[in-house]
Length: 146
Image (cartoon, rainbow, N blue to C red; front, side, top):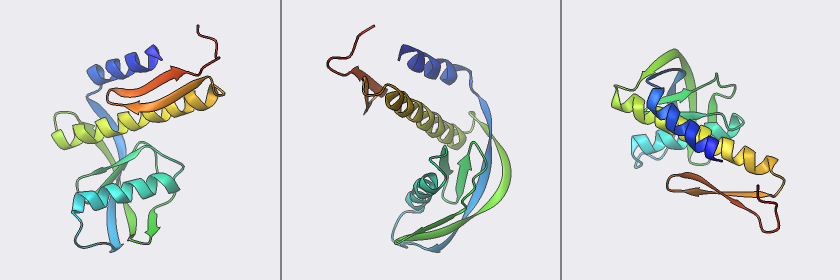
């Protein structure tokens, strides 16, 4: 568990550029009263689910970023219908505040996904829940402590 936290700290101090896949959101049906960035986050969340929980986030109001190419490029939920248009690759630069925030969200998703996988692999010996500083692990009662 300490390794996971240490990796996150090291990554934070050394990562200043990262190449991602960029997509433009084309909305077909949406709630016009909702803030545009909130709509983009909803689209990102729906796309995450249909792309096997790929690491992705929004960039501004009309962009989606992913660490890997996405196979499913459409959202079809009762309140949101949209599709994505591939815009090639983009190098995120931490000197750009919007890029830095997107990169932080991608890193947080990756850490949480790793924590979830670790919990699943522990066969009930570890429990994981979200905490302010990141995933928090606890040993289950009766499990061997090492």
